[in-house]
Length: 505
Length: 43
Image 1 (spheres, chains in turn yellow, cyan):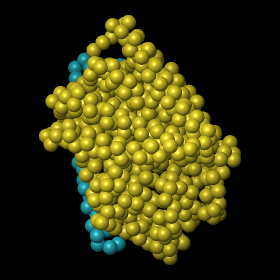
Image 2 (image 1 turned 90 degrees about the horizontal axis):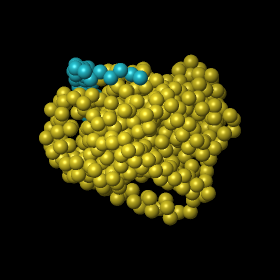
Image 3 (image 1 turned 180 degrees about the horizontal axis):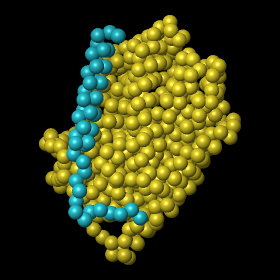
Image 4 (image 1 turned 120 degrees about the vertical axis):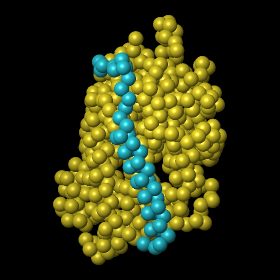
């Protein structure tokens, strides 16, 4: 008998938690950079097409797979996938749904701790009077562990995540989502209004805020048929929705057997799009272009949006005077913190669900075990950040593993489990009429796009493996492989335990 | 802003906002079904 008696307290709480799972730092830092690097305003066309043909179908698939597993008492992907087809290898492919969450949480919680620390520094006035080089050096010093603060905030963040997880779904995760998501949207709207209404010549701005919007949204239709633009759009949709991780399956596995998944999936998915397209596009780029100009922003975004968020914005906010700078800095970093923590909490639940289901652990024990694992696996990301360990985790766990798992799950759902049974799962209890064309899309189009994304990422993988890596990076790769193998072994032990106990579907 | 940038932004923002509000409004209007006997107490 499983000790897992979790349940969602309310439907709104579930949808906000799912939306929070999807909304992450990438909504504000990755999307606008992807847009300006891939055709500006015209990027939204492949982006929304990929959302329709890959994002929504994967949401339907993962939500319904989760609810299907939950009916049988399975709350993690090894046994959810195992319940859909008897062949044993699905369990071991399902291991990705635990591996990815552990490995991503290991570096993501560190990133999350930066936002908490920067929010505190914004209020404490640390950035007041600093020039751009000063703010830049602060960040470099921070990640080089020039002080003990990064460690303190990281531990604090881990404790906070673990404590919330130990409070359960309705008493912990849902409460954070109900507070965090509305605040995130409120702070996002306030910052977007301030960013868009910047006026050249006032408060040190050299351009109107609309110059940044103009730069981001001006369409370049010449690029629209370039495969790289479509791959970038598919990749962005993929990562922004947190699909291919196993966390959606886990959250959905706690939905009641006869309850809707179709409307919930649509609501959570579109809420993520609102935060990304409407808010994400209206903060970083308009403010940065307003003060630095287009050329400088293009240069700063060559290596992604993280630099703009942490190395540049705290300096730009200082132009708004001491009070507004502190308020804007606090809102910006707390907004990122809520975006981060609602995602990292979702990464903890599959691991806990697995331990509770298979080994009958109590919730507290499962939560603190997850916290300890993240502490041990995250430590190399903290101490060897500059040596590339953080990026290595991100590449293999946060990029490659997601795509492999998504390809596997769509094949299982549409081709092995069968589209007719799958369609029944999606539409069972649905509070909306799911258009029939999604049946065709899920069976043929989504697998095709996912395979294209996987094939498109192969040259990068080959490059990564064939290029020489330092010892820390090599150790990180071996460690990640070891983690995957270790989880496979634990799943094998759990499977044997099920056999002994006669627990089969 | 130039016309094409403004048009792209407005169309994208309006489409995304309308769908977001519509689906969330539907969620609020149709609360989860209560099923007899499916209440599971917390530990």
